[in-house]
Image: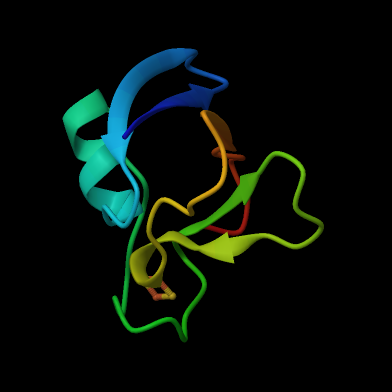
Length: 80
Ligand code: FES
C-alpha cells in the first residue's frame, strides 16, 4: 500500500511504501537530510514525524505502517 509522505518545510510530497527507509524516501523526493554516522548514534539525521512526540533518527527508521499519510518535519538544527 502506498503512503503519501510529505516533507516540510519544503512541502514536497512523494509516495512511499511501508518499510521503505526514510532516507531513501527523502532522496526520491529530492529532499536532503543531513547524515553522519548512519547508525543511529550521532543524531545528525533527526526528523520529526507529525504525531510523534520525539524526533527520530531517519537513518535507522523506515515508513511506519498504519497511516495513509505521513508528515515529516525536517527542522533545521542550527548546531548542524
Ligand atoms: S546519521 Fe547518525 S544518527 Fe543518523
